[in-house]
Image (cartoon, rainbow, N blue to C red):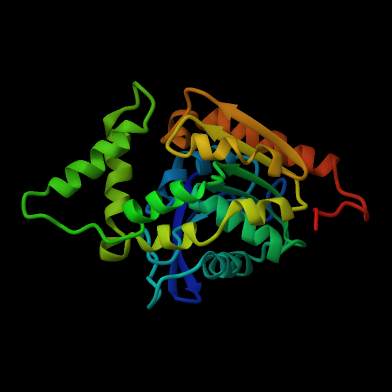
Length: 281
């Protein structure tokens, strides 16, 4: 079966225009899939997955406000703000029910959507759901939730590129690292706003409230250790540790990820919750 073509488009959102990539048609196949990227970054990370999944369902990957080609808000957005922007995407395409795939910051937006749009979000696939210690969170804030000051010699860019290489599995083509690096630069001086949003929204508090089926994937990347702590927080679903997997998995392991999404989506249909299925208080 040939891959579905990936289409780019702009649509209105709460903070201006939202840029999206999508494949398939909303009327096609099973429930549509909403794909939410990490920060800083863009929906470009899902291009190959959209082409694969779009063979049998509608799949859409927006650029969150301020990233990729989407307009930026006039102030740092919170995770609830970003979730409302994603609701605008669902409304635009007339999607009454979706499965959601969220990666790093995208996993937090996905959880917020599940909690605030329970009738529209049917299942979640989360790639990393870090549960930080107080010390880890403080280090993350100090390192990432502040602007990167440009240096005349470009050494700040070298450091950022080296960090991406560090957390990519051995053998990952440098061309893929370069692609992600380029997308990260599009956030400009406000690229750290995504981290501000992510660090203010805690999986330890929010993930246990999710009633929908969750597939939590834990690759061997920079969030592996804090994500291992999230295993007992999944109310309904499954935790899958993925040693050897890491950044660029949406490209290097496209078919495997697509099969996981398809399997989890099908299980969510057959394992529909009864009236008494509620998240813990």
